[in-house]
Amino acid sequence: MARQAGATSAVLGLRVESPRHAFSSDSRRTTVWDWPLFGRPPVARTFDPPEHRWGAGHRGIDLAGVAGEPVRAVDAGVVAFSGTVAGVGVVSVDHASGLRSTYQPVTDGAPAGSRVGRGERLGHLGTGGHCLLADCLHLGARTGRDSYVDPLLLLEPVELSLLPIAGQGGG
Image (cartoon, rainbow, N blue to C red; front, side, top):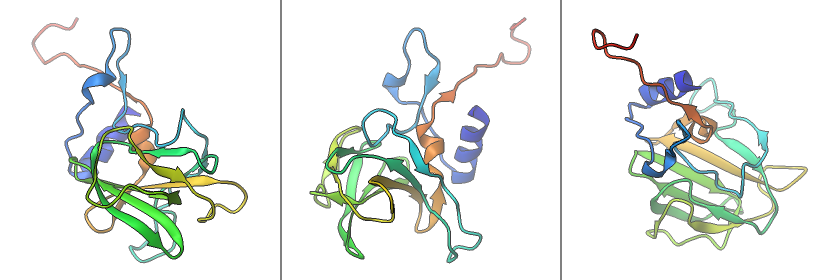
């Protein structure tokens, strides 16, 4: 997993820093983003990037949820968009890292221009969207206008390892 996170940050051209609160005395595991639904919801559908920018694919992940439950910001940022797209409520948040997170379907979405904190409520999980058999939250992540990233790589714990500097001990 650490290899994936490193590859992700290299592909994105981002310096991914660990959140200050992520470390405890008994843990070296951290994540870049918090889960947008309570707990760690099951992933109903995984990321499937299109072969071509305009091609078919699944540019995010779907998380199983319950209509009406709070949808929370994965990280602090500014609400860039809050409205309806093709009849579905959508909220997008721009983060200081250069990533944009997108959530749908969302009802009662926080207004565009609002500053939100990590874990702060953005709205409530709506019904509809593209999950046919159950309620789910579609979570997208991108950099720039159309460079999509697998959000699961930002949500899954990353094992951090410190390696000794050459010539400075370490066994």
